[in-house]
Length: 208
Image: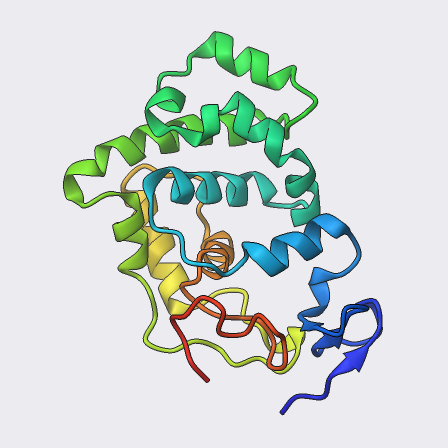
């Protein structure tokens, strides 16, 4: 059993007990948005096309930034990217890109915006091959990490490297192995809640 600490997530990188008496991975603390995301969404299985396309897109926009930055802008992202309907996003043209670049409510990065549009088109092309969700889940590893501390959580894996290469071959961008590992964590393909967290095993896929 991992050592469990009481605090705000800054003093240690093992499981930390919050004011509500529940232990969590340290990064869950520091902002109510992070806490709610950790307790209700992160690591829960996502397989449908809109859900997977959204998470793939937001992980790409997050590259080089904090996840909290993305969470604060997520509602606006959903609005301007038509709730990540791949068909709608795939139809975006230069006027839409110009509008997005002028929108302070999202990450105004031309490369990432253009990649999201291109990834939507690549997502549509995968529909006759089983779809984006099934394709990504086909890279699920046979085992999951059992980290005691944040420092033991991997940032890449052989599977995330293989997924990255496979998606790039299909025309996807901003899908590097580190970004793909973060996606795998977010959609429950691996469980990197530190041991002792009350969310460990919440996805119902892995058991310690």
